[in-house]
Image 1 (cartoon, one colour):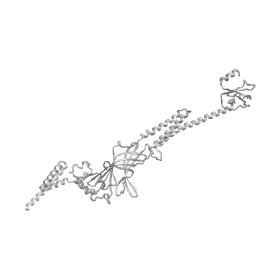
Image 2 (cartoon, rainbow, N blue to C red; image 1 turned 135 degrees about the vertical axis):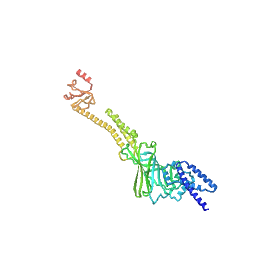
Image 3 (tube, rainbow, N blue to C red; image 1 turned 180 degrees about the vertical axis):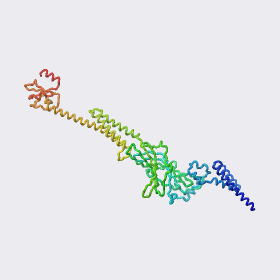
Image 4 (cartoon, helix red, strand yellow; image 1 turned 90 degrees about the vertical axis):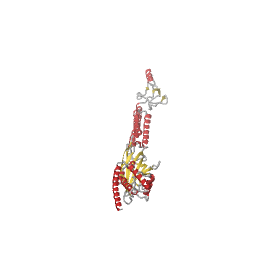
Length: 488
C-alpha cells in the first residue's frame, strides 16, 4: 500500500514538472499568436466532459493551472496596455459578458463617496487637461468677446476605482458622471457657457483598471477678450481662455497640461470673418486670493485683423472724397454756387463716412488709426471749402474798394456826372456829384447857349461856370460828333 502511494506521488510530481514545461511552451506559443483560440476550445470541452462525468482528472487540474499561469495578466502586461489605443485593447482578450461589467461597476460604487476627492488628506489630486478646438468665432469687437467651441478633457487617478479584470478599460456614458467624483473646473473669463445635449449629453467617461479616469465634454463658450484698438484696423490680439478649480486651492488640486494638450480642427470652417488665426500658446500661473492660491490654466489664441473690408468701406471712399474736393480749384472763382455746393457736399460726406466707420467699434475714449485717417481726410475737405470762402471774401472786398476809389476820383475831377430829375436844372453855380451815367449837359445862358457843352469827363466844366439852366442829352458818341460838326 505504501509502495503504491509512493509511486503515485512520484508520478504526480513528474506530471507537474512536465505540466510546467508544457505551460512555458504554451506561453511561448501564445506570444507567437497562433494557438490561443484552439487551446481555449480544448479546455472548455474538457471541462464540459468532466462536469458530465462528475469527476475531474488530476491532469486536467494541472493543465488548468498551467494555462492560467500562461494566460494570466502580469504587471508588464498592464504597463504595455497603458498607452495602447482603444480599438486594439480587445484583440487578445477573452469574451466579457454584460453581467461581468455590471458586477464590476456595482462593486466599485459600493461605499463610494462622490463628495470626496481622491487621496484626500494624503496628497493633491493631479488633473491633466487637454483641449481640442473645434471652431473659433465670430469675434464681437463691440462687446469685446468671442465664441469658441471645444472638447474639454480632464484625466486623473482615483484609487477607489481600481478593479481586477481581464478588461483594461471601461467606456461609460454620461449616466456614470454623477456617481463618481468630478473636478469642479470652471472657465474664469466666460460670460456664457453651453453644454451640448442633443441628441444625448455630449459627455464621455472612461475608466481604466488602474484607477485612471478620463472625463470629456463638449462646450460652447462666450469668453471675454479685451481688445486694444489703438492700431485699428491693423491690430492684433491674443484672446485668452482661462480655467481653474472653483473651490479647491493649489494644495488640494494641481492642474497640468498633457502632451499635445491643445489641438485645433480644420480652420477653413471657422467663422472669424474679419480676423485671421495666427497661432496659440498655453501657460500656467498661480493666482493669489484671500481664499488661497489657485492654479490657473490659460490658452491664448492669437488673431490678426484683415483689412480688406475696411479698405473697401472706408479707406478708398475717404480718399476719393478728398480728391473730389480738390476739383473746386479748377472751377471759375466767380461760380459761387457750384464751388460752394461741391465743398459742402464733400464735407457732409466725410462726416457720414466717419460715423459709419465708428459703428463697428466700441465707444473707446482713445484715438484709433482709422480715426486719425478719417480726421485727416476731413481736414483736407474742410480746408478746400474754407479756401474758396476766404478767396471769395477777399476778392469781393477788393472789388468794392476799387469801385469806391473810382467814385471818389470822379467826385474830385468831374462835375458832369449828374443825373437830374428833369431836363432843365438851375444849379446856382453848383453842380452836384452823381455816379457815372450816359448823359451830357448844355448851358443855356444867353451868351453861350449854342457853344458851351460838357461831356462825361467834364474837362471843360472845371474852367467854365454856368449860371443858366442846363439841358440834358442822352450820351451817344455819334450824336456828339454830329453835334460838334454842325456847330450846335
